[in-house]
Image (cartoon, rainbow over all chains, first blue to last red; front, side, top):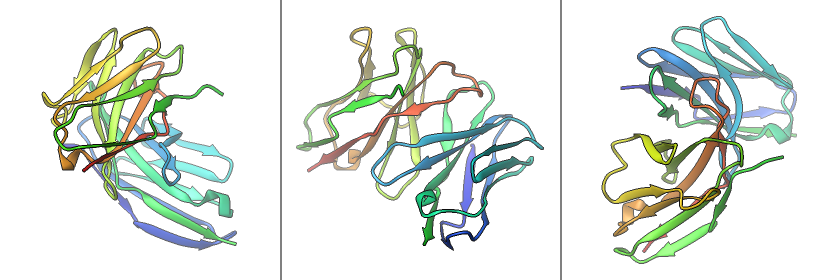
Length: 110
Length: 115
């Protein structure tokens, strides 16, 4: 069974204080690893897809990396508007089902 | 920017009643999904739908649930004989492709409260 574990569950940062969120996964034949942002009461908003170990993707202050066992979402010099829950999810080969982690709730304080 | 639209935003229903949740996917998308998120828990896959049939479903998606694309724009989730534990946020999503390169767009969700 596919499993996704995210840590920490909650993270509080000062504005400008860079940090990383972790996503550990167990999946039979990774087809893709996804990062989403979810604001309270809203649906997940797609950020990145990573396909293979060593791959990296960037978007503004966010950078996602992937190894064979985990993915990191690096946040550089965060701003208060980056406050949200960040979800990691995996898709196994041959399936459309996506398995989500519980998420990391990020709060950036001015 | 195109978006997935879900209605209603909040639905309250009596236990045992049937509810239908509505979704309008992005117009050029071909693959549709329903997910649910019980308060404080993970987002869970329910079902995927393509070419007017279910292409994959989870163990959660039992005979109590059904999906339909009644016309060219709507995609519905029907929950029969609702139970208290069906209370959750239900998200509809759509994508151009089912593959790993898909960018699934999620709607804002319908909060279902079963009383």
